[in-house]
Length: 330
Image (cartoon, rainbow, N blue to C red):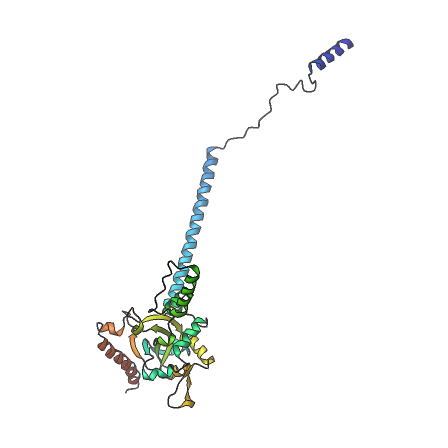
């Protein structure tokens, strides 16, 4: 028996068979079966995905609607002044409470620096337009596109620089120039293109004519001043606005600037700061627009006739004066 066993082992070794794995031959590995999803599970997952997508869309719509409502409220707050006993005009130098205002009328005036009475605002080295343009260039004042101020928009540096370019100066043709020549030509143009502020001899004033019931008198509350390039030197043929500034901010700069002096031609000891000169109404101007439903100028009311428009301007000034006078007529 022992002999037979030894012969079997010898035969196995001779054939190269590993007895440890001889019994595993032909055995296949087992594969775990993954159960398939039922139709109810697939429908539930699809419904959940659709609901998540709908929730995301509703969220975006809600955010868009909230943003629209916010902008609408902001816009309405700008264009609509809420009357409250404790409210006042934030642009006013000396604000009057709404509860004390019995009458208000917005008036626009042109102030021509060439008029004799306005020469005191154009004394040498004290020119009013020069000071305003200097404050704007130094960033001490914000340049606005219209006299709506914060309800409008602020001019960018590029827009402001474009507005002060002399309309009579043409940009050089740099085509075909060498880089150095082109650079010098553009530099020379930049230095000579800006219009001299002394030539901006036209300004407009927006103000509110307010009757204060507490003090029983009319106040002319200046809100904004706009500097123009006059049509007389503009090849385009119209008065071109350069920038609008808040009068309230301008007054604060006038008070700190020794150059902001109104020249008294009759008495050198009685020169006045520009802020005081405006308060005392030491300037000459004429009304070209009064607030009206059509938002039209007086000259447009008379069909564009300049002569009749000037008469209408005088009539508007007299109407304001007579309104105050008639309040005390018994």
